Length: 397
Image (cartoon, rainbow, N blue to C red; front, top):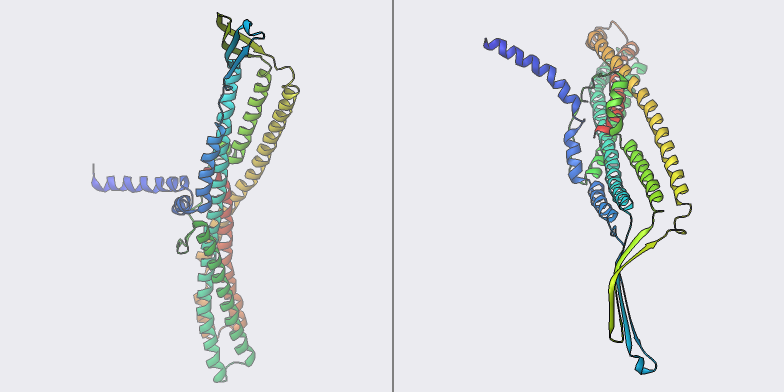
C-alpha cells in the first residue's frame, strides 16, 4: 500500500480517536492524580475507611462458649463429695448466620462508599479551582493586552495635549481609561493568586504549580436518557442510598430470622460418690422477649430508605437533565460567539482610524471596549460550560 495513503489513514484515525480519548479522561487528570497522593484529608480518609472496614468485622458470628463447674461436699461428711462440669456452645440457625455475614459485608461496603463520596467531592472542588485559575489568568491576559493598548493611548493623547491637538477632557479620559484597565488587570491577577493558593492548600504543597491556560474541549455526546442510564448507578450519592437500602433490607430479614430459637449444644459430666455420669446436652433458647417489635422497626426503616432513594433519584435525574441541556446550548453559543469574533474583530482597523483622525476618542473607546467585552463574554461562556461539564461528569471521577 502507498505510504502516503497509510499516513493519511493514520492521521484520520488519530483525529477521530483523540476527541474520544480526551472525552473519556477527566479534566485536569494530572492534577487529580497528584491530589490522591498529596491531599492530607484524602490520605486520612483512606486510613479511616480501612479502620471502619475492619470494625465492621469486629466480633464473632458465634457466641462465646460457656463453661460451668461445681464442687460440693456432703454434710454429714459420710455423704462424700460431688462435682459437676458443663461445656456448651450456642448456635444460631444457619439462615441467621448467613444474614449476619451479609450485613457485615454491606457495612464494610458503606465505609468504602463514604470514602469514595469524599474523594469525588474533593476532586470536583479541585477541578473547579483549576477552572477558576484558567479563567482568572485569561482575564489577566486580556486586561494585560488592554493595559498595553491603554498606555499607548494615554501616551498618544499626552503628546496631542502638549501639542494642543486635543482638549483636556480627551486627555483626562485617556488617563482614566488607563487607570481603570490597570485596576481590573490587578484584580484579575489577585483572584488568580487567591485560587492558586486554594489549590496549593488542597495539595498540601506550597510550591505546587498549575500552568494550563485553556479548557479541555467539551463535546456533545449521547442523548440525555442514554447518557444518564450509563452513569446513573455510578453516582456516589445513589450508591450510598442503595447500600443503605440493602442494609435496611438485610436488617429486616435478620430481624425476622432472629425469632428462630438458638441451639445450645454441650458436654456435661457429673460425679457422685464414686459414680461418674457423662454425656451430651442439647437445649433451645427461645427469643420471646428480646425481639419484640424489632421486625416492625426494621420494616419502617426499609420503607424510609426506599422513599429516600426514590426521592434522590428523581431529584438527581431532573437536576442533571437541566444541566445537560444547558451544556448543549452553551456549546452552540460558544462556538457561534468564537466564530463571529474571529471573523469580525476590527480592533486593528480602529487603531488605524484613531491615528488617522477618522474617529474621536470616545468613539474609539466605545468600539474597542465592545470587542474586549465580547472576548470576556467568550471566556465567561467557556467558564460556565466547564463548570457544568465538571458537575455532570463528577460521577466518573
